[in-house]
Length: 225
Ligand code: SF4
Image (cartoon, rainbow, N blue to C red; front, side, top):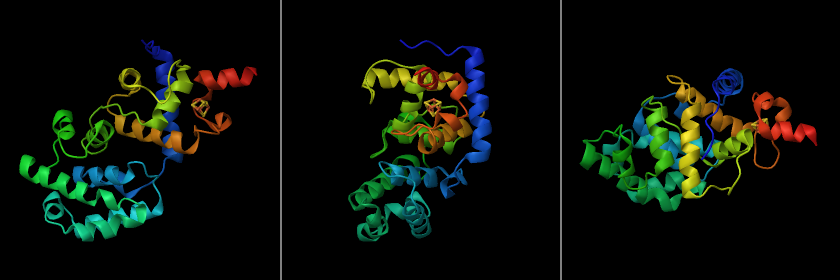
């Protein structure tokens, strides 16, 4: 069981990260919208794919051609496949159409704002469901992907397996939930994603420019070496 971050440390993490995000946060079109369908589409495109320019292009193409779940539910599989082929995601075209059909049939064409309902939709996993709830619906929901898990492991010097096993994933979600600044969870979660992509990277964490270095166990251990 992980220890709960103390209040002082938690505040420093929240404030440091949010201030950093205000200056260094990345800009993507799916961050400019609160449309749950657009956010869901983006998350599907981003699964196992970095946020590259061709992902932005595919996102715009899909939304322009299929601006709603109802439109995507009626789509021709070839048209969808052509739009995401360059990402190596051609195999995901039918999944997107099935997902849209389930939203149309089960939720009158509206992406549900409930974790259980989202998880019941074809192709929507735990991370994607939570991302939609947080980024589109503004709910105070923790998210943990590989990047965020890595930050938490380093920040709190967590022992044990990485990537996390299912039990550890649950504890990581609890810890991520403890850190959330209520009412600013969207910005905080986006900041964690950006820190993992830009600073606390897998192979070369740049602790010298990290907003969390003064409270990071990994950075402290590194400084002592
Ligand atoms: Fe990652 Fe270093 Fe920042 Fe800690 S101080 S979160 S290890 S980049």
